[in-house]
Each structure stands twice: as structure tokens, then as C-alpha cells.
Length: 387
Image (tube, rainbow, N blue to C red; front, top):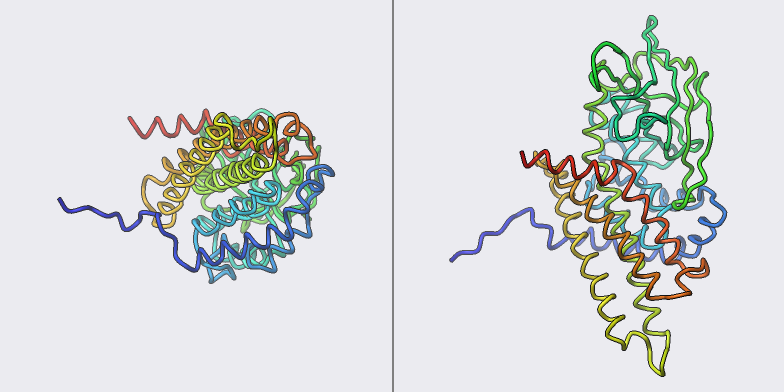
């Protein structure tokens, strides 16, 4: 029998990807990891880390070369997210939002929008935000109340968003608003670029969060905010499709973040178990701990394989990319939550105090099951592909 090989099988990475991964891992160990606890404790946005990423071309990972990016695709971007998240999930979100907030422009924006905004994001000068969710419209974007009314050559936007990453940091917001209230559920939504210095835009309440505390999250407010017609992304009333096509790709960043958190927790727990002694020997010598660590490593490796396969499908434009990105996000985030809980258990009482990083990793892991589509929504996405 002749073995059939899949040319897209992601079991070996290009050497340039491996080399870049090593560079990122070294930078993270030297510059990001020592800052992670402080970032979490002070709940401050790490601008120094963003500048560090820009200087090492990480901010250019989501972008094609024609717009000043690296042109290396989805897989390399998410390898980078994974490496950063091993040490600091808040810092990994800097890269994730750089993709999430620009994908609508990359996929549907006019040439003018692409040329005006993408190079400044690729250089790290600018950072975006993705404003879809609202206080009364989370998993159901069709229930949004933000409105946009056409007046001459401008659109006037009124409404409040919620749970928006990069609030107060972003230079522009991708704002989704209802432009045809009579169109029916999800059908009359459009997407707009709203620069942060537009009159009528303001920063509302910032949330106090369980985890990912180094990334500001909250309510952007649009109060008679006027934007030119040229800031429309794609077609009028086609914004729901813009949002879904974006999330089909961007939720892989959440999966990568989750894999990184899980691997970071596994590595730390294993190192701790080799050093911590009870009953005259390292606790790593006890089968109960060995089996925990073996399961943690194995589940994380399985999640990584699914993540990399899903990334390869996005990079090759496969029709089933949405199903695979949903599966990767579901499995990776559930894995991160389980692994970090086990890591806390391995450390025992030390795992429960903030002197050690696994309690932060556990808090950070929880949001990966919620944002960019809760895992319940991911199960719906997957189930619908099965007929």
C-alpha cells in the first residue's frame, strides 16, 4: 500500500519560521517574561513591549509585504502569539488585536483605506480596535443598537460598544453599526473605520478584569460621530459578513494564545516539580505528579497540532477554514483552562499565590473560552458544518 501524503500537513515548519520562533523565544525570555507579573499587578498597557515587538518586526506579521508587513502569513503570526503567551498573555494580545482590528480592511477595505492605515499598523506606529460587541449584543451581534445614518458625504454614528480590546490605546476603531433597521436580523449592518480623534468619539468605562489585565477593555462611545463615506468598509449593509469573515480567521489568535498559556504553565509546573521536595525526593518522582504533567504536555501538543492545521487552511484559502478555526479555538481554550488548573494543583499552596505565575496563567486562560465567540458559539459553528 502506498502512503498518501498531504502537502499541507503542518508536521514540519519552514526553517525560516523555526529561526524566527527562536528569535522570538529569546526576546520573550529576556524582555517580556521579567515584566509579566508587573504588567498584571499594575493593570497597565505595556507600551514598551509594543515598541519592542515593532523593533523586531512582530507588528508586521499580520500584513503583506506590499503594506510594509513580513508577508509570512497566518501560521507564523500565531507561532509568535504562542511564544509570547507562554510568558505574558496580555502582551500576546498586542499581536492578536493587530490582526483582528485590521482584517476587515485587508479583506474588504478600499485601496485607499489599505494604503492609509495598514502600513502604519505594520510598522507598529498605530494599533486598531474591533468594536462589534455591545452591552445587549454579545454572542448575538444582530441585536446591536448602534446606528449609522447617511448625511450627504458622511455617516453619523450613535451608540455604545462593550468589551472592546485596546480601548483608549487604539488609533482607530472598526465600528459595526445598523444602517438599515428594516433589513432584518444581521442583514442591515455596515462596518466603518472611526479614527480616535473624530469629534463625537470618546472613551467610556474601563473594565476591571480577572485576567489579561495589561490590555485595556471597555466601552467606546459614539455620540453623533461623523466619518466620511470613504471610511465605509466593503458594501453598505454587508457588515455582518465582514465581521464573520474576520472572526473565522482571527479566532486562531485566541487559540494560539491559549496554546501558549498552556505550554507556559506546563513548563513551569514541570520545572517546579523537579525542584520541590517532599518525603525526601522531588515531587516529580511521584507517579501522581508525573501523570498530571504527561497529560498536560499531551493535551497541549494536540491543541497545537489542530491550531497549526487550521492556520495552514487559512493560508491556503481552504473553504472549511471557518470550521477548523472554530475547532482549534474550542479545543485550545478548553485545554488552557484545564492545564492551568492542573498547574496550580501541582504547585499546591504556592500555585494559589501571586508570587508564582500559574495563578495568573489560570486567570488569563479563562477569557480564551469567552472572547471572539464563546466556546458555546464555536460548537454551534462546528455543528452547522455537519448538517
